[in-house]
Length: 513
Image 1 (spheres, rainbow, N blue to C red):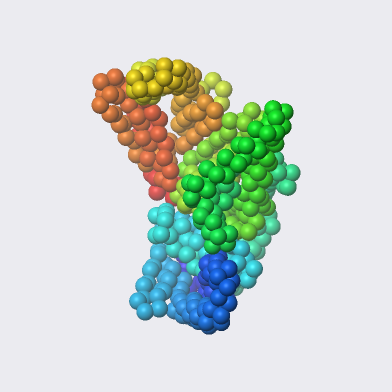
Image 2: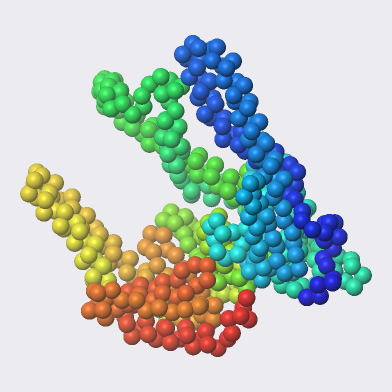
């Protein structure tokens, strides 16, 4: 790249270090304030219940002082955080007392994504995340920039990473680059009707976990000890007397109402989670790859270059699968909310998934593939180990519990054996078209497809039982994810290993990055 020809975005950036948006410290201060809201409310209610209102006049200055210090620290952190987009790397310096400076070369940056949580979104700010492939706390981020500045910096980093020219000889911005978003091809989107249908399949009882956490504060608000065993025994005794007095019909009706209430709560929770996570979901094909945007309160904007897609995963659930609904994810070098998989079509039919898979450079499993199942010895050993645990549990039950209770572990052992025997039919793999495909799952099927040339290593692993029984587990090195085929015959594992290594040797991996 010609370093004398700078992208047009730099014309608006003064030389040297730059700070994030001035409103960043306000966002951080408001965030700290929201975290203190619940403790402050509990403290105020406790003082009010104790009748010591005079304490509020003493505590108020302390609270204001804490808030002032929080905003001051947020302002100092903003003042001391600077960044500079150099010719070869981006450098971020931070720290009030102790200074830290981190530089990341452009060629190490896998991608740049934009994220808008609720509070920054209200201020019109975005958080810029630089994906380096390291994951976790090692990722670099800038919080917060204006939307325009974030987009400009993202384009700048991508241009310098790839060596693309984004200006012409006269210094004008390339119109093709400016209009890339307008010319993007929409591959998949979800409207409100699709979101509602999706949410109904996302049944969840997570709300009860939230209520359990909130119950920790019940003593402060209601003056009762929520975890007192005697309290719950008395409560259940009263309810038992009341239920027995209703009669059989009322008891059945009450049970039906309770089940329906549970279903309504679970469905409402699933709908809420789906709308918050996938509101405005849209997947587009751009000149730079795939672009995915989604989120109601937290809005994310992620671009996945085609060559960064290492594998695809197609999955479904026990209920939605019966209606043909599936989810498509890309295994990528970059991270997506702590996961190596980017969900690109969370609720779609096969005809909607196929074009996305093909654009990514993969092919859906075709008819006539030479499928191979796991070894029958692996199947037998798995059944013996899993069912054997229940059979062993039947021994103490037969010795110390009433005789009828021994039926429970025996029934579980038989059910486990039948389920594993049937599930073995769905665990299979195949080679075809330069790909390796793995399918598994009885109730929630999952299919993984990887291009052999993008695999980085092959490992054949055998435990003590597998060595004696002649089968192995094949671990395929996949940048950004895992690809494992379990319980295949040793000869088959070696044949797959040779085929994958031959494909890797045919092409220089650096050509794909």
